[in-house]
Image (cartoon, rainbow, N blue to C red; front, side, top):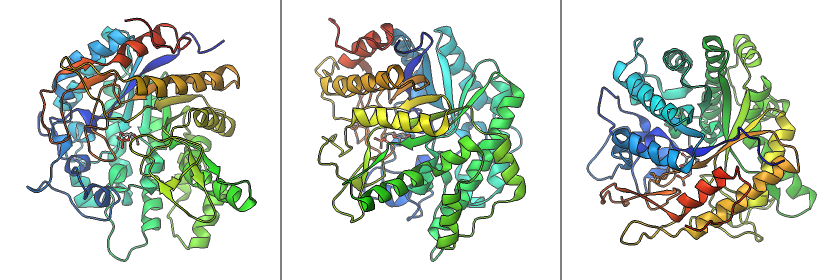
Length: 477
Ligand code: BG6
């Protein structure tokens, strides 16, 4: 009953949101570095505003992040203290290939992650590695236009070959692209797309997505060839759409939204384009170049497991009304749900529903690689945060996840909560939108000592892991 004995409990981060040290040890500049805090962030990440360098007028949170680059040993020791079985992190592409189109990797970059993986292993922590978490070397954007160009597939394969060989035996679990469906909403992040005036944006996004899909299939091939023990997963921003009302028009709208969100995962999991998407291309007159060779690659190298982030469910309505936020996706407000301080709707049962949807649809093992509550924390003079709101959110989600496993029979490999240590928000660039069990002393403007301290949820999660998810109540501390 409950979670399997070897269930992988842990936490997740991304290089660009925590490492900092963007110009050390040969690292090249990346799209994620030049995305600032403030009102220009959204037009930049959605590809509407060209901004490929630093300037004086903006603040760039990724420059320092939480300085994980220099402090990872201290942080991994804290993860180990919580009992982590796995740690999800991402590789910064421009540490390994600073420009992206070199043929020889940067040794210092390779060494950095090798040491980090060894540090994990020291504590029996299994690394779970996202190959690309929204990052793309800036040179590839300037020179090739990012993922709109098919040459990116080749550069990505070079990256995958270098890391697959170097980390053989150290890393077994891999994710090819973080939230691949995010390309349809924020194409500068993840795909390095900046739109040119007058072009068909949807066509550009789907063409870039196609290149990523082919690259993902090639990565799966390479990783399996280098080590048959490797397990390769896709990764999506999940969260089912509900129909606002039971009238057929709303139900139809929710079906369309769900398909839109699942379309790229359908391809990674099944190995071919679904008819509904091909029909959509046809009806909208989108000309996407998909070769016969591409089709073969997609078919031959499907993923081993499906991973996803879940923060909120969403609502679809035939007549659009008031919209609410939710991880770049805007959705109709659900009158039955409360929302976070950032307007993301809180829905633990929706988590169970989403787990069931994905399991039913793909019949491949699932891995929850992001979940959590972004909230404002107020530490006391010792840096201690009594984050009962976070504990409440996570306890309810873990219970719902347990129901999906225990009562519904969903096959689930693990759970990594998002931002297990406070880090920079991807959506807003803020530090004050915190997810961690570990508080980091740094604010939106870059003030603070970067000191780490344990929140109340640190002790709570430690007990959750120790009881393999059976006890989600707050223990005595
Ligand atoms: C996911 C991303 O979209 O959500 C993370 O994979 C991101 O990178 C997380 O940080 C939470 O979003 P935000 O905007 O609160 O940081």
